[in-house]
Every structure is written in structure tokens, then in C-alpha cells.
Length: 364
Image (cartoon, rainbow, N blue to C red; front, side):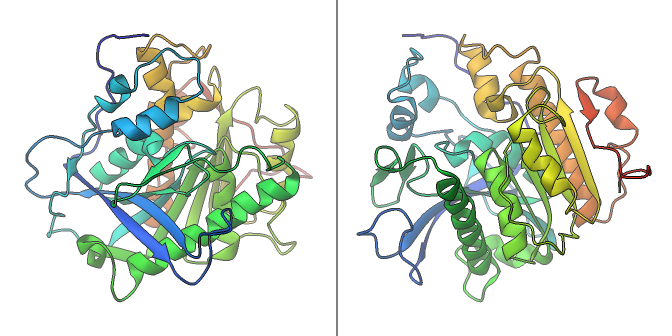
């Protein structure tokens, strides 16, 4: 097995120290959509937020039990102790900064089988810039979800679940319900987190990777509280109504897979592009692989398991964080941003892939 220098996540780029906490939520109004004998839907979320007076050791990236489940069955030659030794840049249960209020909230949904921890670099970076980011483990869809009572619930959608279009639609619409429930709890009268009073209920966004990115569209269609959304490298289902979706939306994917004409995955974006009637951008990153947009790409590089990406995982992570932050700054903070028009020139790996409008004209 590989045993090498301890891998590390990139530091957040904002000025705020970052706190983090994990919260167990239970939706008693509905059964679990995947496991017949589970009468309620249980979720775990991780919250990253601007903190005051942080101290002590930084949070662990993964517990050993979860790391073992994530690596189980994968011929990667990495000891779970390596992943469980990684420390993040956030301080567990640090008090939220009491001087801040009206904070935008960003919900993050990970890729299919991937734990919410794989979006840590994105969540921490957003929090360091004055956002609250919440990553959701969609139970039974991820390699492992650890609950406070010691249970580690593994992936349950293997044998017996055919990967049909109906299956994937259920994944995405089910995640939309998970997200609406998380928002209900955080914005309701008895929130499960002490910092919830600082949230701005009219400044909510969502972003996700792969299935989580596709679920972002499903969640926006189902829940008007989500004012802006981003799909990172995830093919979508035809869920947008014929009347269209007029809230800001960003497509960000790898070139060769999600540029117009690349194939079936890109075709799903082209179909939805025509129905997005508000501000929109379609960007592709040259040299990236599917995991490159998450922590998995940069950790793989450090662990000596290159993904064959011409652009490093660290570089693609930096692009993803910058792009998402610019998007949410513009649409949740009313801060006009030049990144999509001018500063993109500083990122030669990124190009706009928006199809031309019928009859000409610029994209919104």
C-alpha cells in the first residue's frame, strides 16, 4: 500500500477563519426512498461558516471508518489511515462570528457514491469569504454516512438497482427533497445549528458535482427559495418545465465531455440551456477529469494516483472555487463580477462553450 507524505487540502482564500460542525437531521414526514424498513429519512450535513476566536486542532477530513468504506473495493493501494490523517482548515464547533449577519447560504450536493467530505475545499473557501456552506450526505447513495450514535450506513444501491433513466431521475428528485428539508430545518423556528439566525433566507444558492450538480436543477425547479444554482460536471434530466427557469444558472464541466457536440452528456446541457431564461453561463475546463472538480482530484495527485488529467487537481479545484464564488457573489450579493467576462482570460484552461443564440446575439 502507498504510505507517503500526508496529503493536504488547499487553504481557503478568504479572510474569515472557518468553523465547522456536523448535524444529524431526521425527516419524520417521509420514509427513506431506498430502504424499505427505514420509516424516516435520516441525513447528515456538514456546515462551514465564518468563525470567531477559533482554537484547537483542525477538523479531520474523514474518520477511519468512513475512509475504509470509501476505499473498500477500490484497487488504489491506499491505507484508510492515510485519508483519515488529513486535517482540514476548519475548526470543529468554533463559535460563529457574532458580528456577521445576513449571510448567504450555499447547499452542496456531492457526486453519486461520494461522501459530502469530498466538497470540503469548496465549502471551506466559501465560508472564508463570508458564506455559510452546507454539504449533504444523501444516505444510502454514498459510500458511507456516519451518524452520531456510531452507525456507519453504507452504500445500498448496488445489486438490484438497475441504472435506468428512471433510477437516475429518482436520485435527482430525491436529492431535491433532501435539500428542501435541510432548508426547512435551517430556516425554521427551531434550527439545529446555533448560527442559523445569521442566515439570509432570500440569499440561498446551491451547487453540486455530478449527480449533485444535476440535482441542483431538480431542486431549483422544486424549491423557489434557491435563487441561483450551479451544475459541476453532471448530466441532467428533462425536469425544467416548458415555461423555463428564470433564475441564474451555471454549467461548469470538463472539455471533451460537456462542450456542445461532445456526446450524450453535453446534449443534456444543450436541451436545458434552451429552457434557462435568466442569466446563464456554460463553461468547460480543458484537461480536467470528472473527480478533478472535487477534493478527490487533488488528493489523488498527492497520493501518487494521477487521474490522467492534463490540468492538475489543485489547479482545477482553484478554478472551481473561484468560478463558484464569482457566480454566487454576483447573484446572491448583488456584486457585479468581471470574472465571467474579463478575468476568465487569466484562466486559459477555461472557455465559454455556450451555443450561439438563434439569429445571433450574446448570452445573458
